[in-house]
Image 1 (cartoon, rainbow over the protein chains, first blue to last red):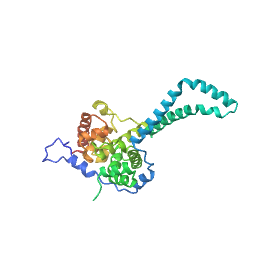
Image 2: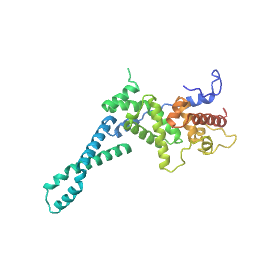
Image 3: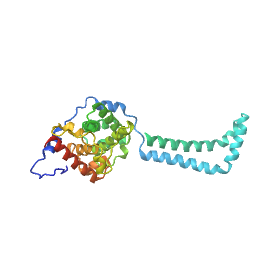
Image 4: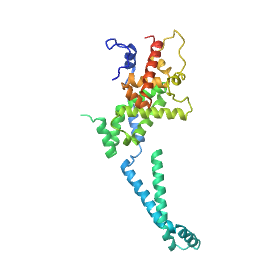
Length: 116
Length: 176
C-alpha cells in the first residue's frame, strides 16, 4: 500500500479514511453475463500469427523474385490471351497471382489485427 | 480453492476459456466500474459502457499482459485509455496532465463558493481529471504511486503532485 498521508502514522488522516470508507462494492447485476455475451472469438496466439504472416510474406516475395524477369511478358501475354478467351496460358501467371494474393492477405490481416 | 489471476489468464490464453475470463470480470467489475464512475462524474450508464469496452479490449489484448504488472493495474490502464478515447471522440476537453501548471489550469468544475461544504463525491467531481484519477486509484483502490503512474501513463512525479494537490483541495472543500 502507499504512504500518501503527510501526517504521522499514528495520526490517521481523516481524508484518507473518508476516501477508503466511501468505496463500496458494486453488485454485478448481470454485468459479467453481458460482457461474456459480447466476447468475440479469441484470436490466434501472437506467435502463430507472426509465423503465418512471415511465411505468407516470404512465400510471396520468393515467388515474385523468381518470376520478376518474366512478369512483364507474362502479363502482356495474359492480357492478349484473356482478350481471346483462352484459359490455358493464364496458368503461367498463377504463381504471381498467388504471390501477390499472399502479400496482400498478410498485410491486410496484420492491419486488421492491429486495428481490432 | 480459488484460482489466482495468473491461473485464469493462462487458461484464457491456452484454451480460450470464456469462463476463466468471466471469473476475472466478476472479480474486477466493481473496482473498474467504480473507477470509471468517478472519472465520468457519476454517469453510471457511460461508466458501464466504458467498463464493458475495457473488458472486451482486455479479452482481445490479453496476450500483451505482462506479469510484472498486477492484473488490476493493467485493467485500470485500459479503462483510462477507453475514457480518454471517449473524451476525444466526444470532443470534450482532453485529459491534460502535461505538467502541473497545465493540469491546474484545467479545472474539471469550478471551485465551490467560499464557506460551502461539499460531500465527497461532489468534491471529487470538482478536481481536475488527472487529480481525480490519481486520488481514486491510490486512495480508494490502494494502488501504489508507481502502479498509478503506470496505469495513467504519466510520470511518477506528476502523479504524486496531482495527489498532493488534489488532497489539499479536498481537505479545504470538505473542511477536514
